[in-house]
Image (cartoon, rainbow, N blue to C red; front, side, top):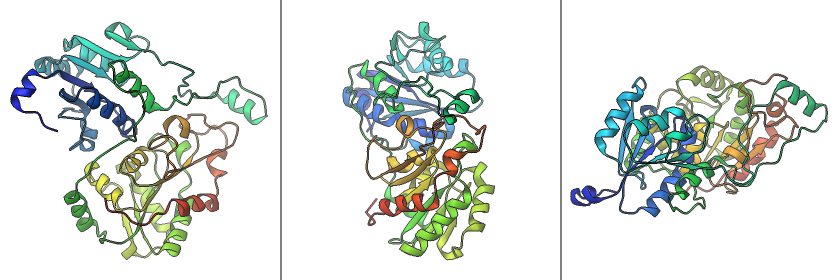
Length: 376
């Protein structure tokens, strides 16, 4: 969407302060779409970290992107924003810095979630509402008590506890529709064709994507040898290729996994550390299904309508699951051990939440998720 110069001059100028993590950014897209729906003639600008800039080209909710470089100070960012003369700031992160940036920028109306230490910086503070549950790390005594069969007093999460509802509540304070939409990202056919040519994804061929890493920590990682076992079984059953994804920090893990696979080189692509964010989107579209841990590419794939199969361990599919909650094309396997979800980075006991999820169970979910190829 692009506004003419005259329309832009007279339009309401909205700044959206974007979040800092890939999965969270994807979960803001329903709120961005609702914001666009509420203000169809506004100029909507997203302020995003440079590492996430590749997520946003062509997104229908946005007119402009402003990038925050990694080492750019808050005062420098605020000075840039002040020169833009925004009318309204929608502050998605709960951080003190995000509220300070928009305040120092002199933006007269600033809307964001109520959070300690920063409420005075916002002109409108949005309450969590209802029986919403936030992610809280369990203590070791709590985990031990749960394993021993003792009850830990904690209400179940409300249906609107999913993280995307936090962002929807913020834009609802501006009159936007609070009902969720499926998260949405866009990628073009030329981008897909370029990735197919670069990495050898032949048109019409079937691929299973594998993403065995998780930046948050080992408590979110289903064992790599089990990923390999499922991948080999799927390859044999569906005569597909295997594409191994991951960031720069996952290169060693991807190499370890590829060595465990029985897949021959012509049907194996190890893309960990080899794609830009934009190329990741295009490569995921080439996959029939993505088998992944709970991590950023999980959300990206779901927002591109690629079915995902996800073993959940320390985290909750209710709070941060991919896609629109309840979407049957995604298969979210939540462990039933009493201490899960604990939201810890590293398991203080024996990682029973993930080790208890068998290859056979996950393979059955991949079989169900497998769909006839559809045009991107």
